[in-house]
Image 1 (cartoon, rainbow, N blue to C red):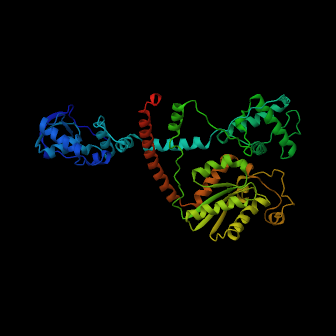
Image 2 (cartoon, rainbow, N blue to C red):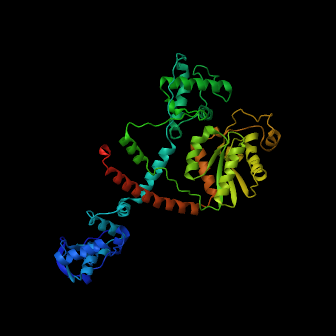
Image 3 (cartoon, rainbow, N blue to C red):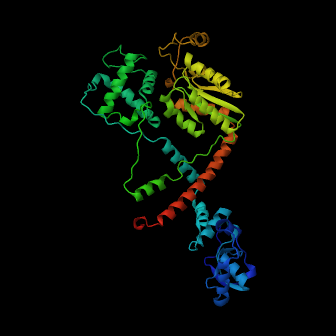
Length: 466
């Protein structure tokens, strides 16, 4: 908070040089003043011509503008100087605000890159800079997938009035889960089971159930809705068929503009670096990646998509990251279905890391989906039963019975909330918050560096460069 003096005008007067004091904050912005050739030249000019421009000081005699003139005058043996006294006192300001005052009165001086950077640091609001960093990160993580142009002459049946009831339920689900686009057909399927519609409004016995016939009906309905435009193509994704794309530019200025926009946007501080353990996440299904990935990013958790049992190479990568961390213990957070094979994933990973890779200190937690969560959320049986062909069938049935539940049965918001709470229960949250505080400081520094670099680039006349 700045408290202004009651004086309305700044005073001009002569004052003994020994009565004024350099502002320590000036060194923090512009660096300490050295007795170099430039300062000696300025001192000789003062001896010859005097100080042409008054030194600006506060009412309590701290220099606001004219630190080099002050040091050169001392070097020249000057005893009295002309000053302009601002109607403020240094004690009226906090450190940051006083630095901004110094910057205001040193706007025209020649500055090197470090000095310009220090000035930029004064302009940036820490909360805004951090929000920009998080927004940039979120935007980068949630890049919309490229839509696919469907060609050919194949015709699909139009959507009949009898299918409208089911389609309306699908459209509502798509709308409710907009935050998690692109969705999978399988994910929509499980959301329909929470409040099953009629597959055909004129057939009372056509309630949507968990079987292949209903699922195939949903696949066809969504396909038709995408073709008619009721469901945008980008809303439904297929993570098993990724598309790569190369960016091209019209010319050099356009490329530089894009690069400046992206400059330093990918910074991520490792918020788990000060934890005692090394944490990794293993997700059984790729179809849930777009739901789980934001939480993994938030907590800086490396995430491995197992797609069933995790193969040897991904397990080796996990061990490499664990050993590179220098931490004593490896902690795995697993998300898998509640079925014989999903339960076995945790145990098989533990055995492999211990026996195949010699990891002695390891702890494995199943974050989702557990029997306690199934009971707590009152997930309804969906008609699926444990597969007798599974080698883990008898062990699973003995503990839990024959009913099985898939991860997709949990709504995305509930899944994210449960996962976040589970991770927070495992980590040292105080150390985690300390890292966030440091990341906020980093955001301000990055913002200042970015603006300084971009200003320097804009000073170049790119169009006329040879």
